[in-house]
Length: 235
Image 1 (tube, rainbow, N blue to C red):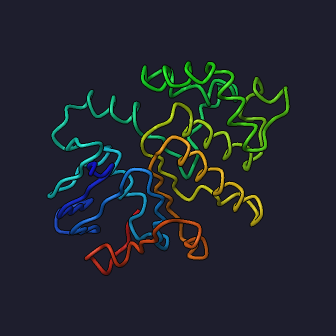
Image 2: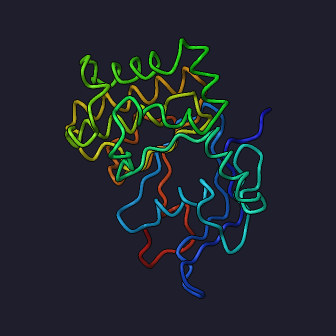
C-alpha cells in the first residue's frame, strides 16, 4: 500500500497567537483519489491549501506531502517539491500578464525538470500545451501567442487549468476554479480535470462552496466537519 499523497495530523494554524482558525485532527488524500472539499467563504479553505502547499506553516502538527514533512524541509526543497509535484489552479488565476497563453501554460516546465521531461515524452511542451488548451475549448490557432490580458475571465481560468495540468503533477489543487463558468461549462471543466487526473494517476483536491458538485467526485469532505474550530472567520 502506497503512502498518501497528502497527510495532515493534529494540525493547528492561527494567523495571530491565540486565534486558531484551523484545527484538523487528521486528513489524507490518496494517490489518484478525487476529493471535493466544501466550505463557505471564510471557512479556511484557502488557508488549508496554503498549508498543504507549504507556503504556510502550522503552529503544531504535521503536513506531509509526497512523504515529506513540509515544515522540516528547507525553503529551496519545498520550492522544488511544489514545482515537481503540485499543480495549482488559483482562485485569482495568478497568470503572468506579460507572457502569452503558450508561455503561461509552459511555465511549470521552466521550474521543474521532472515536468519538462514528462512533456518531452508526450511530444514536447508546445504540443502538450496545445492538447490541454484544445481539451479546454481554447483551440483557435491564434490564441497560443495572444497575451492573457486579451482573454475573457473564463478563458483565463482555463489557461490557469492547463498550466496546472501540464507535466503530470502528482497532486492537482483547485481553489474555486469554476466561479467564472456557467453550469454546462462547469461540469465539462470538472470532467476534464477528472479525466486528466486519472490519465496520470494524480490526486485531485477540488475546493468549492458549491455543495451541488459533490456527486462528481470520489469523496466529499465538509471543512466544517474536518475542522475542530467551529467559529471564527478564515481566508
